[in-house]
Image (cartoon, rainbow over all chains, first blue to last red; front, side, top):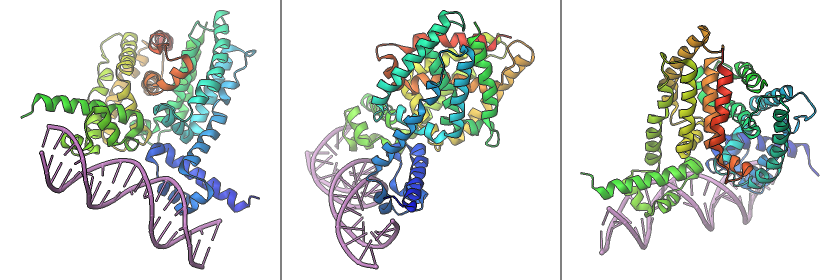
Length: 198
Length: 198
DNA sequence: GTCTATACTCTGATAGAC
DNA sequence: GTCTATCAGAGTATAGAC
């Protein structure tokens, strides 16, 4: 049986761990940092979770669960331009709302994706292949410009995740008070509208 | 006086360190890994360099020296579309030729850019402001479409560096035998030609 | 210049009192 | 459930022989 205090403590630990892992990577993060951020002692952390690795794995698993939703939602029956623009918007919103999750993922890929290789080579790959086929069909039918569907999908990832993963750099260049996401939405809308016009 | 063996050993160490740091981040990398990759003993490593930190700092400094060159080369007197397309191409070539350097940089930014905050807030920021003004002038004059110059520059960074930083993911999705850079060049040419047309 | 041996610190994890 | 104390291993760096 799970008490309320157990649930809130687990939540606090996972939130603190997300903060620390996304900022320093798996090896760079320490249990001391996570414990301090969570307001608990280090042994108490390990009362709730078996190990540092278990915390990290749980965070990644949760993330991957929702990571593919924006791509999944592309409707083969919808209007091509509308569908792709909406996909870009959903992805940009994820960068805005969940920048730490994006950086956790980026850290993992940068290091060769050792823990999520299986996920990427199977689930993600199948989904990308499926949606690439849909987009290729749209291009074939002349409903959008003849673009490579894989590079199109990669471009959405690159352009949207950049605002989360490289937020530190963007903040230092534009000034921290400037919110990059408002301008980003308009800019990316311009980019994809132009790119896709038949 | 520096002997030839000293020069080659220093070079081997730096190359090995770039390999390991770019793949695991600063904390994730160990001197043992670097020593093994360089074919030297760990104490011998520290005969050539003062510390782990010194090696890392030297790699970053060298990188930043050339990191801005592609942006610097944008010529205010040139043809706007040609200049921006050539900039994108130079940057894409850097991702292709120096993916490890790109990942070293990405690791640093992901972690909040602690070691290169000064560089970004001063040199890089000044250069970006300067080139943004040039691009804004081109837009003002109607020579390219009216795009936000900062987001335009960020988009070049995002789209080109993605092929280096997320190479592991791209390889798992498209198959390792598929070279993503050939298709990328054509795709990005399409993107920027469309984006910039007045 | 290069190695073996080792000092010392940090960190993940456990023991055991309360 | 939570803490103090502590162990065991890893990792950076140094000492000193050759």
